[in-house]
Image (cartoon, rainbow over all chains, first blue to last red; front, side, top):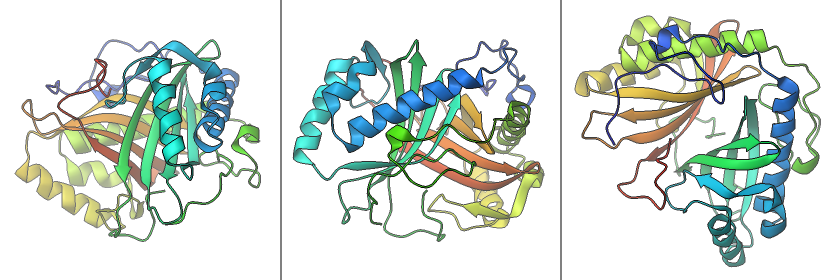
Length: 159
Length: 159
């Protein structure tokens, strides 16, 4: 995947002006609808808690679109593969939990910074998930995942 | 690092109520100041472009606090170790670029979803950085980093 020349940073979910240097990235032309953003945040928090902590996968996924667009490279597109994967995973790993450390809501996207783990003996992984919400449904997902190392150059943890 | 029982999602940079189930996570009590959020976003975008794409490390870091709190486990606390690390890295990797795909601004935090790479032949890494801005200075940083794989179960890329 070739890396393009430095491009303008595009504000999530907001129609941005054509590309310019990121140093000149424009402030979003569209005013932010913070009430909508907070509703999106709450929807995603509720979904995440039910799905990844209570393991109510099928019920929690009522807010996931059938044609859910998946950017996690290990999982195919669609709601069914996502639910199927984690239903099996939680059967094999009933101690799996995902502690939401912080969240952001901006435009139609909700970001979650998460510490996922399979129990107290597992250092776990740092995860940032991004969900796109459209009309009260989760329609798209990106994530970045990194193992929590045994040692670190600072005492702050990854969270 | 033991994983606590499911906790309330805490809104970034906002004093949250004591823990409750994330499903009941409260809407932030403090109204969002979107003008401040957009100023924070612009400051971070400008910094990032200068630092990671133009490689003007020392000059760009004028907006980084001396006692910068570092959560990347490979880098010690402080502005000097951060600048020193990347000044050397960019000398060794002059093709290094960081394409900002999208951003979020929420409270005093700015999130950047980035595709970093050392040139066209490098698949690179997916990165989400989180910067905390206080009084026009970047004072704290978290990130999660994952190599872009050669193959994926969907055609959407990690971005």
